[in-house]
Length: 164
Image 1: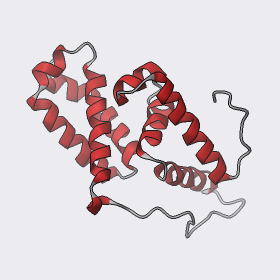
Image 2: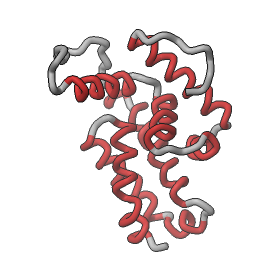
Image 3: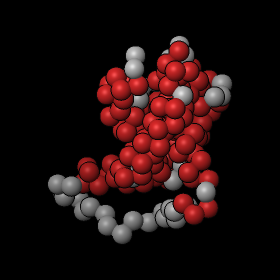
């Protein structure tokens, strides 16, 4: 598969993944472009890998983590929201989704990456572990802690430790 074919088939999915990791459409496009430009330089090596998509996804997750580490890119996450939809409002569902994404964006990078890769990309723990370069047990731990954090911040009751 050529680089152009890869970008043509997987480019939109990579942008969606980046958008979920960053929470910002413009930052996601920049991040994807940056990762694809680095992948282009090394495409011969990447395309010979068993699963080039896993390699590029890992590059995307790592690039996002690196961007967040820079002091100048830190954003302040707040617990309160200026606008909340009232009951009976047609936009309530959209407002709830937006509020949940804001809570997800407040999670640590690895926890957020695990949730996005598991629930949005629908990947299994072993594949996520390959992307994040950790063990499947670590993936499950990050998922458990992320969901517990979200439940606590949403006021939902805690579960008895069973997998969601």
